[in-house]
Image (cartoon, rainbow over all chains, first blue to last red; front, side, top):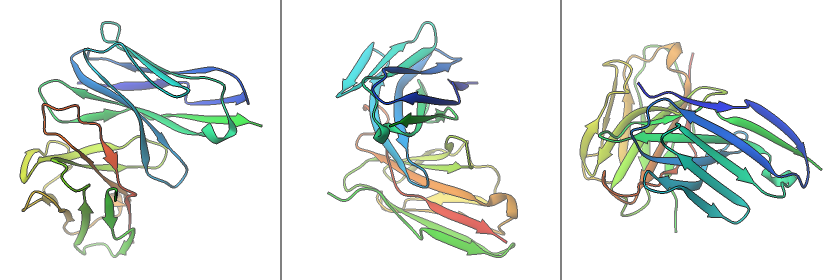
Length: 112
Length: 116
């Protein structure tokens, strides 16, 4: 059974810092992995999607990597800004199915 | 273009009543997902549609929950004889391709269900 864990649960950093959010999964037979952002009381916004054959994806200040064999993904945020404050969720879809399993998220606070 | 929409945004009902939650995916999107999200947790998968075919309903918690997508577009999640433990945010997502595609999921704003 696939389990997705995100560490840390919460993180507070000063503005301008580079930071890394971690996502680990127990079953390496994944189809893809997607990172989302969720603002308080709001819906989920897609940030990056990594297919199982890919090692990383980049969008602006965001870079997501995937290491299937070790069951890990990281989301790197460069030069953090207060507007980056949100909860970041990773989600894994396994091969051979349609179910998408989410982690509980990392709550990020960027101090001005 | 318009994103995924859900209605109602808020629903308060009494225990024992039936509720129907609606999801209108992005136009042309083949795949549609339903999730339930508790406070402080990530979304929990409920069911998946490929066009009108419900291809995975393994996440539906019991037989009070059902979903349909009769014309391959709008979907309805129905909860019969609601219980207080059904209170949660119910979210819908759609993606452009079917099972073999890249399946980037786009989420709607959710329906907050409160069962009194």
